[in-house]
Structure formats: structure tokens, C-alpha cells
Image (tube, rainbow, N blue to C red; front, side, top):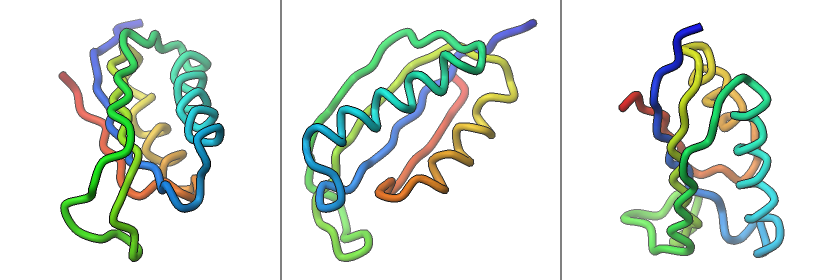
Length: 96
């Protein structure tokens, strides 16, 4: 099966998650990629940053960038999980 290279960035709420939950949620997305025949190349945690504009009355977010290789069906599934996960302020998945 052909695999493509992707990058995903997601911003988590710092009000809904404590430090432990931020790490656990990052691990959850990493294991989701690996469970769907993907391989994580790098995980770059940017940490807490000020948002350019308030999202849901929040001014700060926890940024994480993950580079991975996966089948073409994974980005859609990953986006779906981001959308149903409470506390994900913004997310994007792009093909490199």
C-alpha cells in the first residue's frame, strides 16, 4: 500500500486540559496514527502560545506538530477525530 507524508498541527485548549491531559491527548493522536498503519516521524511540541485571536473566549492554546507517513485514508479519519474531541480548538492535516 502506498503511503504519503503528512503534517498535522492541532491546538488544544489550556482551560479544558491540565498539563497531564495535554500530554495524554497528544499521545492519543500519536497512537491513532500508528493504529491506522501510519508511522510517526517527529512530534514537535510548541507548547503554550498566545492565539492570534480569541477562539471560544480563549486567548492561549497548546500547539503540537506531528510529521507522519500514512495511507491516504488516514487524514480524513484524523480530522474526524479532531472534530469530535472536546478541547481541540483548531487542527489541520496537510500532505507534504
